[in-house]
Length: 357
Image (cartoon, rainbow, N blue to C red):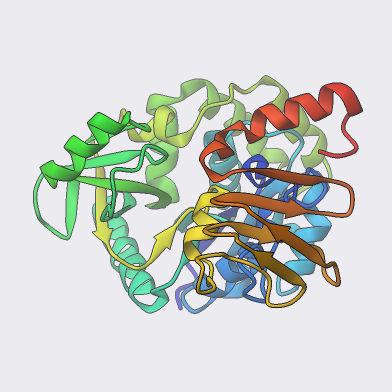
């Protein structure tokens, strides 16, 4: 393991598409939605811990989740959890970590990963990450990881490659195309899903911020002297109040001319919806994804059911439904309408306030 290599885990989201399991008080990254016995963020840490020493991890999260991060990754100390006062998307999140690392170790190399993805082929994945880190260190490039698509999915961003090399220069990024365009991408063979996993040197990403997001560069450069001191919390509060919310994809990757992608197949999913949980869950002979105990189904097909521990559910006559029960919320809706969950949340919030959100 290299002392120059760091892993930055982005863990600030609230996972609204997994409501009512995922809440503001306990978001998706801290849940075991797939029933593996470990939370998403724990899996993410263990996945990279074979490449990166524990002291070289940083987790960027909302400050109200700091204790949860330390509970799920007790190998970290408090200084390794960077607390955002408010969410500002991925560019400020990454900038916070990058400008801190520049202060601590200007030669640092970073792999940046979401906290809540599923990766089944972990050995192949680690091989790819190692290749990316070696390439990024030698070339000074910004590297992202692409996934060979298995279907014309409209929920993912796409990356077009310029050739068939293992590490190919990126032609363009396309964010969440419509179905017709996604089908064209699949047929073309030059497009891959954007995993949201990035590799670069601290030097390269800060140069990119200076060139493509100069207002962020100015803010975080001014913040840098306070990082790691008692003044950090107040200074971070001020910077996040002022900085524009923007993703690293829009802010940097789509503009930069030194972006490369390493494509692979390693059983990846962002597990972004109940539909993807259903896809990756073990199912009974009637294609239902249900708990091992406590669920009694009659004339029910192709549905997903999630229950609190020790709760019993009797369900009859459902076809392709989502049933999620918690202590205070029960949600039942067709799988085809899961995009309406945000509408459900807004309605509940309007009538009942934040207590069920």
